[in-house]
Length: 326
Image (cartoon, rainbow, N blue to C red; front, side, top):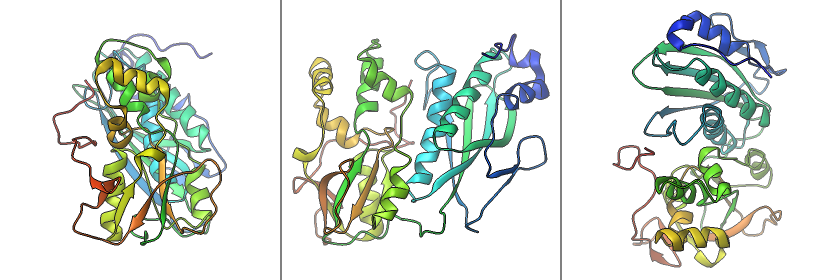
């Protein structure tokens, strides 16, 4: 167990904080030059690099009274690496941009880095560098890199009429956990932890590519919204069958307690980072994939329907809406 960093970020200073952060990191065989130089060098045997980036803002994407620094680190890494997996690629490296106030306890960013490092290890990736600056609140910006390993990327634009829609991973758990937290509770713990620290099925993205997935996305903004991205890019309509969605009994209990139909969380709750993909109808899918709908020819109906009808209830994550995590 490493000794906790003492004092504040301001007392450590920029270079002291960088030393604390980088001293906690591990590496992988893909990392040729890690932190400590002007830039990192990461092997790219495929000669193509999959890249994505996300920003997490305190009060918007996380609250320090709800989540530990370690949780925030795990969540930040997970949501980026899920995007890599959703292209059918394998995460290889992460870069961190960090903004922190000078009065922030020094153990907060170091424990956050532990979370980023540990989540990266789940996907066999490593943190290879970044930057730290002073600001008024905590902001994390993570860039993730990935390797396609000589396969074609799976984009949002390949779905065709006749394909089936299948999902692997949790849906609605993070939203249910958020509902619990906003009401001042901390249980059921499984749903609260799903909100604090999502667990994307990283392996499922490359596996889906190997199964012939025609389009794919991770569920970060909500199932209806994210399937809408596929439908729009592919110029098709997607119909979801609500009877085929998994709603655990405990989620139904939470919904009853807070007055929310749990189907709303499953269809529009984001941040679970499940993987949803379209496949040729004849493709036999492993048990981990649940078929939840089908791809249809475009029509006058919206891009995504539920049981053949428009989904009229609000929901789905929009960074410019008034809903925040705090």
